[in-house]
Image (cartoon, rainbow, N blue to C red; front, side):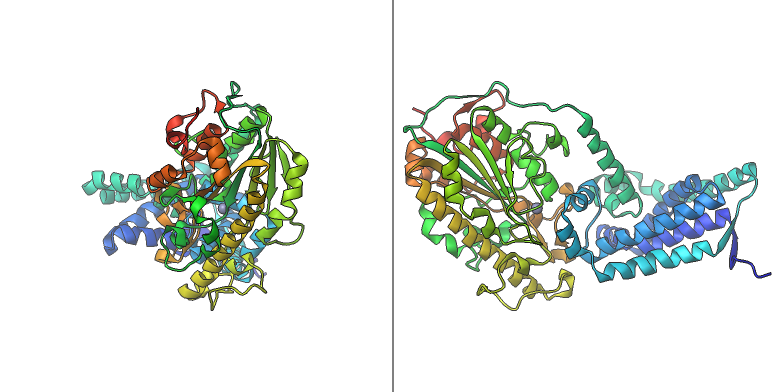
Length: 532
Ligand SMILES: [Zn+2]
């Protein structure tokens, strides 16, 4: 009778082959990172052997019985192939934030990423190995002999690894400490660790809601009886490097020219995270980048709650992936009902909407901005875009760098038009309101620098392009007078380093909100404002 198995191997042989296959087939990024730290072949082979030792050890613990071994091995192969697709297509690393970003991204954005090539990866890197695993008869020895073999196997590996590490032990510890990216490149431990990190984060869900700044009270210092209208435009994926306001040679912000007198651009402004899922909650949090805990936004009060507590109407209008749990206790409007909309939809009927609210208002406009990889979808197809030819391929690595930058710059130029149109509306309302607009992107973007695309890189090793973001304040003369703010004073201070950490305290200061959570040193307006 023909056997249903084509291959018969002992369990310890299967462990070794599977560990080696995992290392060679799915860990290109790990070898790439090792070679950038030290290009010597010996260093890369040494690093590879240590990874092999760790894999063998983990698999020796996991692969316990013939049936469960096959199920786990097949499951891991498929997940490994998906991880490999994302890592190699976009040159990204996987940590919990990257995984969280994927989970929180809406289906259309996921659809923009998930296309045909991923099926090839799953077929070749997941299904094909799965078929070979099914065809293999894995022989397990009696328990004690199985344990002995595995112990021997791992001891030999550990001894060889120790011999590799030992001669330069200090140096190797330093490398592991300084190059955290190695951990995020190591498949499958990177996505397994990320999954566990997210599960831990969602523990937060069960914690009760904790308000902040419960001592908040308003000390009115402004010199008229108008209502206040504070507008925070949360940009998306705009990077400072491509803003002409910051010195980029292409006039990507030309649309804002009419308002330059009343506009203060912050040239040296940094994001609190490299993905929407982290940076947006952090922007509204009272905590600084260093203190902010991802996931805490689920049950911790934020800037909008503080303003609501002193009587402001909070309104969040969204053209992105909702408000990332920042608007849970205020009004949310999501006017885009189609697959995606251009940002103009955020300001449709904005003036009548605000007039009908008719009280102090904190408005957030959450843009789709320059979200990739399909930058060309961020502006209307019938708009005469200034830069061409553009990249229309959904995998940015398949376009020339110039085509990619052209499409991206068009999205920035369109954001400038959107911001100008928003300011036009607010300018008209400045007779009725003390109005101010604060614009800040959530994070930047990599456009192929060092082969890196998109964003969400681990914060500590993120490229500057993902962290350095555009930010500005627009304040008409009437508001500047009412709040006693000296625009020229702001302009003089605008070249020093600022970040998302400044947003919470600057709005509190401007709104005259007194609370123990307010830090004057982080209030952008504090030293340029007369309070009497
Ligand atoms: Zn974002």
